Length: 60
Image 1 (cartoon, rainbow, N blue to C red):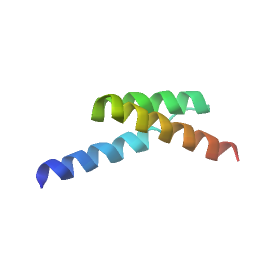
Image 2: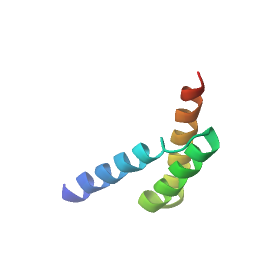
Image 3: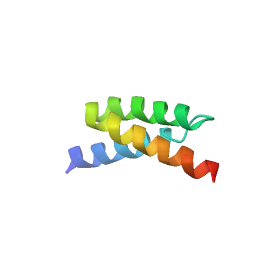
């Protein structure tokens, strides 16, 4: 149970970091790096996608 809560907290932190940056590219890169730290290659893909989504939402 504790391991799952730790993973959820780390994933939440990675998604929050994906909103850092001024452009869509920088948000995607920040999310990818944070995701890689938390979940390896799959985390990098998820973090990058989340960062890109946040960047696109900010444009609109």
